[in-house]
Image 1 (cartoon, rainbow, N blue to C red):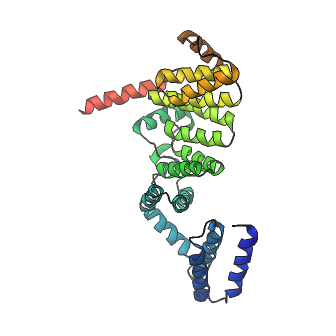
Image 2 (spheres, one colour):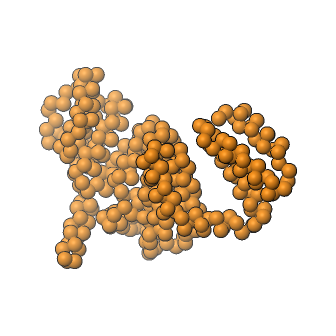
Image 3 (cartoon, helix red, strand yellow):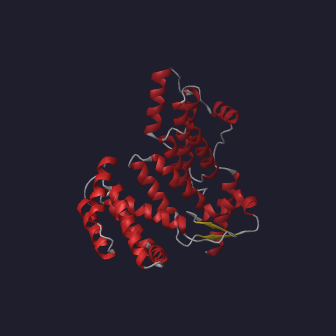
Length: 310
């Protein structure tokens, strides 16, 4: 909906308003129903919703807090509904619910003397404490009451799918504030950076994902992501090397196709990349190879804990 059309409709609505809250709320609802199913009507519906809310607050000043409390209580149900809408390919409706949940998460009152997290796994929680213990200090780590990580991950992923990566960046940055060591979340953040052309940030995110990776497929994905960015900046030899390294951890038609494309475009050959040449070049680029010692140590600790519980 163009701004001119939006303003014309809003002027028509304004002309029908009388100052009587009951009448005006009904009028706004009627206009909302009229445009609810029309493509591109989101700005109009958002403005209508704001005006209805303002009318309701005039009648009951305590209403915003009541509504917020209700939204917190129904957050899990609303998230499940958003997932159902995504399955039905009703992306706009699903995104609307997810963005509302995102704002509820943003405005949830939390004590500042506690570190509020929402880890994707027990391993994430342990790795986080190793990497962030100094910055945490004596603060207690507790789980966020709303469990926001998967809500924000789904919202960010959907925004990328809908070709709105700039908006995804902001959502995914908030996601990482609740679990900054989950490779799956980091890869999605990197994807948003790549889509917005922020290649330096995408490389840094992939390098951080490497330091948190615990699975072969995660290592492979991180090397592919770095290789993609190097391809974009025409650093073809290093890109081919990293694609080759990724293939040592996981087979990938995508990586093979990228190597073939680079060879055709630049003449760079994939031959000659043995373990020693890859190791030396990765050292020069400050790119780690394999699972980090921190992650290995925590995996071993988890395995011991599991064995003791049997």
